[in-house]
Image (cartoon, rainbow, N blue to C red; front, side):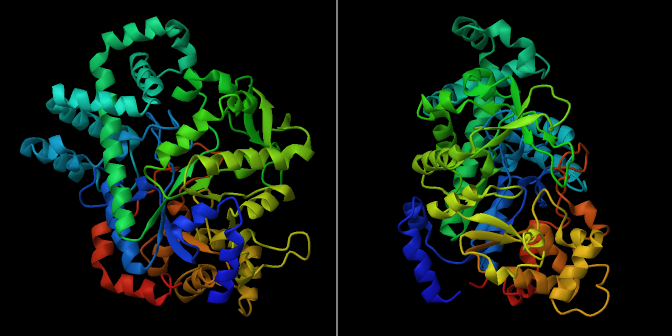
Length: 536
């Protein structure tokens, strides 16, 4: 992108609602990588990627000239492994703590040796075994807590809790879930319906409250340190803020007045799902939230700001209007949009996005896939917020269905070739004959497109999208590693998630190469540099 064109964009953005957010990071073309934290692998982890692995990935990004590192949500998933259905919109998942860097572990040779033994046992796993990883890591973290639990730590945790009032919701919920064998709060919430009952419960379980507070304090310290490290290396960290929260969560338990408990969010019938989708998450009572000046939402973003520079706005169209279904419906067919009056969608979305912008200096980047009313993208552009361009879906759908060249993508966008909810680029190519044939011919290929996407052709497509007109180009780590034959076997094995399904293969993919090996492989790094992945 020429400097003159960049200057035009800078002038435009300087007059939008995101002007100060852009000024903070600078308006430039940026390339980056997206990876679920759980997918990272290192020689020191315990069967799952952790916060220390991000440091190594930041180093790798710096070497490649990549200036954005995006991860999926890192909120506490409880016993589960679904990042978009967490127990809290605030709390970090203790499973991502780098145990070997916890002070009480690092200073205790015997405990550190046990951590390393656990790592040797769990690290070879091809997929994340959440139950075993949690059981192992929580037991080790509990030992570290017992060693630390004294007057000094208790004072530190007292101050940490006073500075993070969301813990007053999360801690009782987390301990109550444990006491009630992880059943939903809707089974036991009525037993603790007064402040007096909750105080009595905390007094009876004070040590467990301190333990879970300790986990949040450690996670906060480690993720804050990594954020600072990334800043020193010139890498922006991009988080992910799910629009909705799980019905069985601390937030819904303690603040049901902010949610419409009789309904659930979903998606209307479309070309991908004739029955629509029923997600089960409660929808918001925006009028109730407005009466508090959206305090809960503001606090949520302000806490995330401690760890991130940018954030993905999940399902951004839901802030304009959301498909709403009666609780317990058999499918997503029997739904309606809220607000119901289409003429109000633009104002509704603008008001909520402006609130989010006012809450922090993080720059939002919107996920605007699916059926999107024109007013949504018009509003995003007027506010200076980027949308998402996934190459395989960028076609002239209202015309001849031809492919839109990435060079024609608008500057206010994030270009990519796949997402965590889609096939990898290689998987899409393998499974979609007509689409791959169309792309093959568009790129100048003759005859039948090759069945498998690899080598020079894969490199060409990624370079093609990396050179798009978008200010951001961010690629899933699988698509980059696929350039070098590191991902073996069927491409479907390397997919992160298949929406609408429940399977052990969802949210459990682990990178087959360690961060240490990636950093040590100068040849691979040079090949990526030669691919111009880091150029601007």
